[in-house]
Amino acid sequence: MDLRDSAEHQKFREEVRKFLKDFKDQAPEETAHTFRLSPRPYTQQVKDWQKLLVERGYACRNVPKEYGGFGAAPDILKNKIIADEFFAADMPQGLYGQGISMLVPTLLEHGTEEQKQAWIEPTINGEIMWCQGYSEPNSGSDLASLQTNAIVDGDDFLINGSKIWTSSAHIAPMIFCLVRTEPDASKYQGISYMIFSMDTPGIEVRPLQTMTGHPSFNEVFFTDVRVPQTAVVGGRGKGWKVANSTLKHERGMLSNANASQERLNKIARILKEETVDGRPLFKNRILRDRFIDLQSQVQGMRLHEMRLLTNAERGNAPGLGDMVCKLLGCEINHQLDALAIDALGEIGILYDGIPSVQEDGIWQQWFMYDLGLIIGGGTAQIQKNIIAERGLDMPREPRAVAG
Ligand SMILES: Cc1cc2nc3c(=O)[nH]c(=O)nc-3n(C[C@H](O)[C@H](O)[C@H](O)COP(=O)(O)OP(=O)(O)OC[C@H]3O[C@@H](n4cnc5c(N)ncnc54)[C@H](O)[C@@H]3O)c2cc1C
Image (cartoon, rainbow, N blue to C red; front, side, top):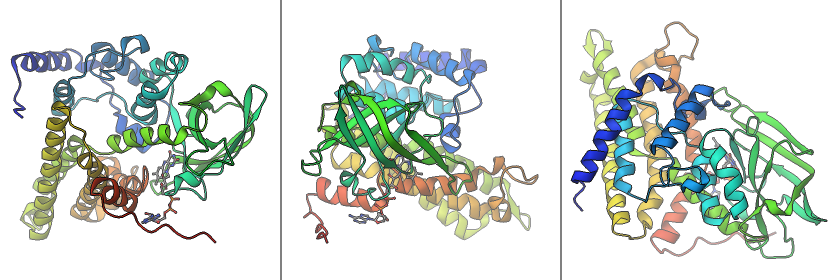
């Protein structure tokens, strides 16, 4: 496939560049990534910027107009032009996260008309944050074994049980949550996917501190939490399919070549500008080898994304190609962070607030945060199982025998 700009795409690229030039002053300092590192409610400036991007079609571009999006017909090359131009201009792109990137596409696929009307617009505008109630103390990789239950009580469900590692539950006003509504059905058939307010009586949130020092995830306890039956997305007992749709979007959110390239560019600057005994770090053979190795891996990611684009443009299913992105992207980012820390030596492990720290101590924060992303959204080992079993048609791993 020829990925060079057609006349239409060249015109579109010029439009994006002009927007970035004209609106530079309105862009907030914070990026979506800073909010992920240290979850907190969006500032008004961030929400205004997001709203502007949605109105102009530079965020949530393909979300239908009736749900508050821009309503453009899918054109993957235009989406790529937007991502590349914002990246090149070093301007904050649209927000992403559990609501915008995971719940919104799930609702578009499985939600009722009322659910789409109620939740999509405030979510894409950054007005409502969401958290994801999937993992439980005894159900992580084997998610379908979850035990939080919901029993019918009049027009409602009563939910009892607990979730763990629930990112942003301490600040998110809404949750999408997996519960067991059919205790007698088989493991995969008895699950329902529900959306409800975190202010519902009976919900208790206890923050957990991660290695980064930020309380970014939580334990969540449910005691007789009353939720209307209309909170179910995709049909009662059919939540496993809906949950997998969200997981697919989560995997897609956690890796992209531009984000890795941004880190690589910062490391190149460190290796050029920092010196040991008067010699730039690039002269150090070990650091240079590691840099070149990672540079070729990031380039590989970029070419792989091009291959996926070509596939999508031809209407082919992404299949195996899509499955490797989360695994590789998260591992490459973690290796990039490690290289930056090693290159900076003792400065690399300083925390923000210490006078000689560089770039607000971002590298050690990224190093610890990115280790979490190798686990969150399905661990690296589980990704390898998915690639082997669903992508390469290899025999399924033996299932553990109960008892
Ligand atoms: C930063 C972060 C944010 C998170 N945010 C959320 C969130 O918002 N919402 C939410 O619901 N969850 C969240 N999680 C939880 C995450 O989804 C789980 O940690 C993950 O699915 C693994 O489950 P577990 O921790 O129970 O580990 P386990 O499933 O107990 O796994 C332990 C180890 O055994 C390995 N293992 C397990 N089964 C297999 C197998 N079949 N084959 C090979 N190896 C195997 C795993 O790879 C892992 O190394 C988050 C986790 C992190 C780290």
